[in-house]
Length: 239
Image (cartoon, one colour):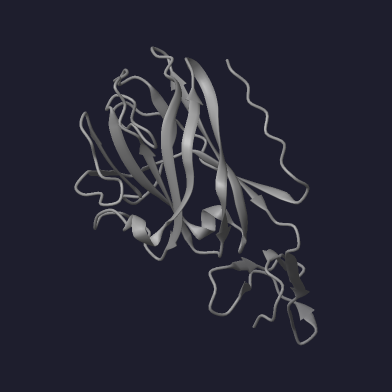
């Protein structure tokens, strides 16, 4: 296996979504059978679990038992959405931010690919859409070269592949799946704050109460002692 070491700064918060396995015929986020491909996946705010932060890197796990592609050109866009599924089609890439345009290394066997974003993404607490694109290649690889995926209850991913040029800025058609790629996101949370407190009724602590920030997606539930905490908030005034 190949090992790439990325040193993240103090204050980095790691979000790991999914602990699945490769799924036959579901080639996302990058389809190496097709010479050109794109895919979008939605990760909900509840899965991410923090209200804000700066995404510096993302990581995918894969198993390429039959191929050793090496360095390949890819692009990644990130954005936020109120949608929870992609049944209605691809999200317009023009509403997303291009965060990586370069090469990444893909090797034989079970490995991780870490993509250090050239343009860090400022996350504001909504559902996150990650749009991945494999640049047109002269080579096609095995359908067995797969990434690790986890199942959801909605059509949370959409993908399309071709052996000829696709326009990543105008994605059309494709097929949906309930699977999303397992992903690790690295957030810089330095300088962020925390709201914490205790909920009582007539002087007695109350557990199981939902505490939510007005006009935001973040919420939590008080513990048996009435305590709650909402970390990773941009400094400011909240209600």
